[in-house]
Length: 480
Image (cartoon, rainbow, N blue to C red; front, side, top):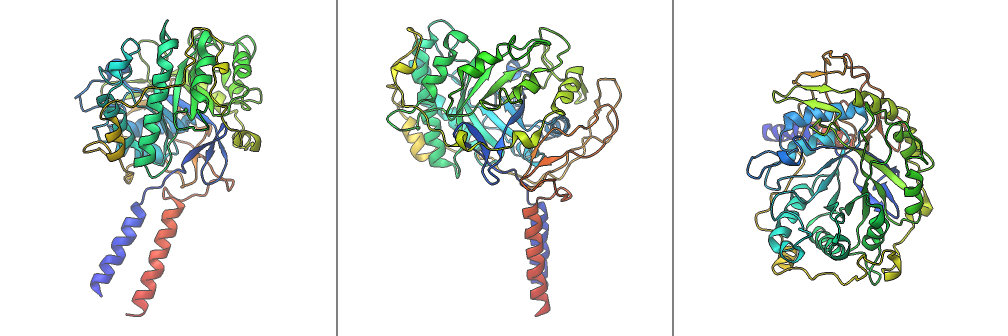
């Protein structure tokens, strides 16, 4: 009997340590949708790339999601702000990202991940597409899939970022973007237990923006295998205290009015007028735009030389909130989250148009939908998987208190900063927490069942598992 008792208590310990997980998000028509509750998911996001692209170095052993201590600090500040999604640009697929990904999962924050990097041979070269599109490149992008496919908070992958931008790129690049998208989707279908969306992030080059979207989002011969699942737009046209019309947002809404896939701002936050007051937030999440747009990603979390940051990070691990953070939080706290989650049956029932040259307006934009064949060695990677993949997995998040000093925009130290693990069916939402003093009310979450249920940091599924194990134990010991 002692062995049974040991097994019993070991199972209880394991169940308590079971990681609470967000629900997967899927693409349904022109909406992101919670796979379990069917609530619409609107991205309330932020770009997260400490050190910027220049700070990403091969072999350094460091990328934005490799240090759990720093991720805990940043996740706590993002949770207070109301963020539900981060975008991470440059990642090393050979590093361990388990703790950081699990921390963001625990606080209800999803991840949108770029598969490319600025390092040589780790992205398409618009000036040498044939040579840069090779099996070594595919091995790298498939490595990102392996590293993040098992995390339930992986929202999607960007197959490219602002590749159609410079003169001449509109003619030659689009077929290769569809090819990389095809390869990623085929690899995910073969090696992931769930479908993970793949999309593209476009520069706001108005001459080619509509054509880029039309080219990448249509279906060839009734198949969506090489079509993007979502479209991101890096737009900085709302500067200062302008409005829906003077910012040009009305033009964007009209341009994408007939979208059949989710569209969102993959970057926004013009800083020509400082401090930023973020009046575009109420427009982006208001009735004029939510019929077309699925939210946006603020640029950016970390203060760099370009002065877009919300938080100033220091080499010793301390951090200071900037006034732009406070101003953004003030706007987020005005959002009607329940309204944003309301589904739209007509939006989720849409299907992509058939690819045709008639979809393309510009005379110098690619009109051929015959995309490049997979390069030599690429199909073997898809069929058999990459060699020695670094496969990520959820791990228990046992530390919730931030042990690094963080200061508010008023210079005062924020006391008792910590994360709160949310129940299984919740994503993070704006919650009105004060970031100038000690911790106030805990972060709220969103659930199909109304108000969040307190679970002391353990997901409801974990609680049910514990109760089930206890019931078995009572039965066993009662009949000993």
